[in-house]
Amino acid sequence: MPGTGRAEGPVHEALGALELVDHHCHGVAEGPLPAAEFEALLTEGDRWPDVSPFDTPAGVAVRRHCAPLLGLERHAPPADYLARRAELGPEEVNRRFLTASRTGVLCVDTGFGAERLTPPAALAGTAGARAYEVVRLEGVAEAVAARGVDAGGYGDAFRAAALDAVRAPGVVGVKSVAAYRTGFDLDPARPTDAEVVRAARRWLARGGRLDEPVLVRHLLWTAVDLGLPLQLHTGFGDADLRLHRADPSLLTDWLHRIAGTIPVLLLHCWPYQRQAAYLAAVFEQVHLDVGLTLHHVGPVRARAVLEEALEITPFRKLLYSSDAYGVAEFYTLGALAFRRGLGDLLQDRVDADELALSDALRLARWAGADNAHRVYRLPDGH
Ligand SMILES: [Zn+2]
Image (cartoon, rainbow, N blue to C red):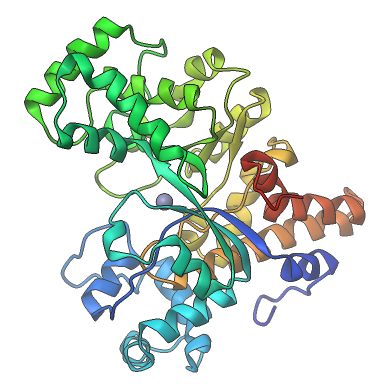
């Protein structure tokens, strides 16, 4: 790859040719993005005076790797970048970045701000990919409350609504943002019906988003009953998060209790990729990705993060996701950072004779596509 200072080897070539399965991503903005909105989507932080989101690892990576796809020089200044983006228009910009990611399958989380973003089918059409859907369970619970339910009926109503939601065509998994709502230092036991009624009484009286610990536990156990793979946000996110409570190792007791049930996919993980790797090494059902970390650290550091994640993670347990949201650039950057980071680290092991080339090619294909096919039992799976 130009400018990396490192020669490409057969592992890079194989990853370059592989159509990725992006097992956790979101829609992109359908309409034009004014400069301020684009910049806000570049960062998990807020907008601060005199601190441009372009002056971050993600921002410089956009200028370096995305500008050429808009017909600009590498490292184009932010003003030129934004002007060219506006000139081309959202449809063309989204098409260029989504197709450049060479993604064959998208598993789309439709649970947050989805009304402003491209729906899965349209996203897949633009990318030339197939799309599946992942249902966010907190959204289901909040819709049940919004429709009106009494505390005694909440538990059954939520379970019925969740079952309904996952029976929709194209749904391959569910997701929880418990990390944001309560964190993972929860009682690992399944709550009793009486506990759920008492908690529902408190939550329904208070209103707002689902942040009642007993009901979050009930939600996680309902996910177990649904039988589909469960994605859990862990680690890095926006300021709404309390990072130390999003450490996936806090889930250890719960993971013991649900052993032998559903696959659990730990999303993002940074800076807890080593904790996540430990869990993937000792619990059959645990898998992980490094998700949005890929574009936030940029292609130069993606290898380091992937390398930590892979120190002890069984190779069957690492998946690719872009966690792209709002701006299509992150589809390109995530895919680039993944292919380069994984390609570099596997190729080096082959060159040092620590790994056979045939094994490296197999592990690359597993992480980039086959592990997701296997976990989600995708209809067109390998
Ligand atoms: Zn996400």
